[in-house]
Image (cartoon, rainbow, N blue to C red):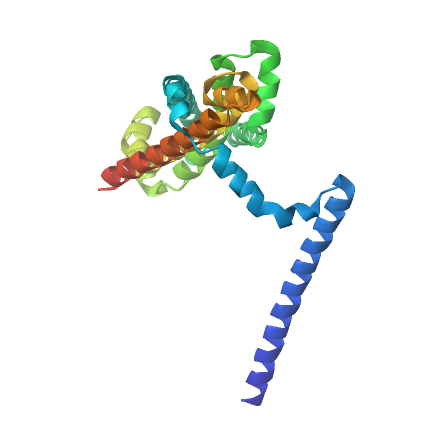
Length: 267
């Protein structure tokens, strides 16, 4: 009994020590960053003033309503670009995933190549894609579409490959034993098993692309991101606040629809 009490005491001492080390490191990192970047740490004392300023200036008012038509149009364009990029990426990613998955791919070498390609595509941030594509395609909706497409292909290819590899191999082998060809195996054993998770990944990617599209719009001069940037830089804070509110409502609405679709599919 005494040994158990001692072990318990040592355990909690180690936990407290580890917590103290983590907190100490966080403090050291913040102090170092504030010294290097010349942070004004005293600003923490005036957070309440910043919140009050936001409430006074960014809360939409009656004057902001006249901009509602422009905001809705930009919001619709952003939604269309996000859905289109995700849909096209989903089709391309499914083909790559079937060729790269260990259970359905033709060779290990091709699987490694596709995995490497997917890793490169998804590890380049969306801002990086947008900045690279701006040199060739300039500021337009197509540039934003491509930026979202390339990132989505990398993410969905990896997600689809893992989903396909989780399919029971015995079902695939059973069809192969009966003489089924590759397309029959894919259509009869693989696709029916992965339909629900694939739809879930696509819906998740639409939500993610919708958020990223706002940031991409700031760079490509399109969509709701451009409208927010325009209003903010011209000191029209009320309409800018209305843009933020519209984005929040759209993201929540898309998430609710996605949840409903996932529930219907799962039934």
